[in-house]
Length: 174
Image 1 (cartoon, rainbow, N blue to C red):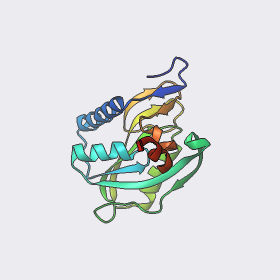
Image 2 (cartoon, one colour):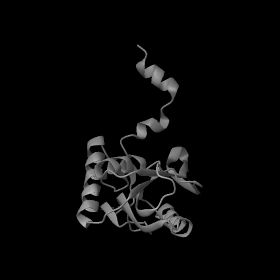
Image 3 (cartoon, rainbow, N blue to C red):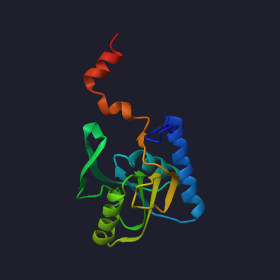
Image 4 (cartoon, helix red, strand yellow):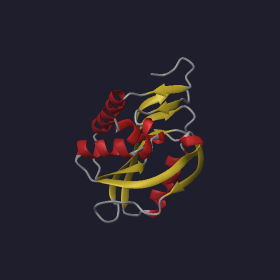
């Protein structure tokens, strides 16, 4: 649910999974066949995992990080992993790059450039996201929701950002 001021978007687990299914349908209806899904960790892991299961293709993972400041709400320096984890050697062939959103677009721009320059085995690369914010400089090949504002997206698993083992003990100890 988007707040009236357009500054926050609250997403339930059901809505989140429905959006991933809609993303899968967009990719499927395009008719494009791909060999591997490459998800960007952390935001793209859940959508990547579900898409990998739906399309029955291997899931590769590339770790990225830029949201560390202010409890993960402010974008900072972008770190990209040196290696891609994949069950089939080097990543190659037709690759669907998946993330949860195109926020500013900087991460996806950098990753696409890195993949094109550093992975000659990739013969075709397309991108898929759930959300694209208005301020994003990046436009994915597949996107479910184009957001007319730039809201902070409250995803259903955010509660774990402030969870600790001690808090879990408090929760589950009677």
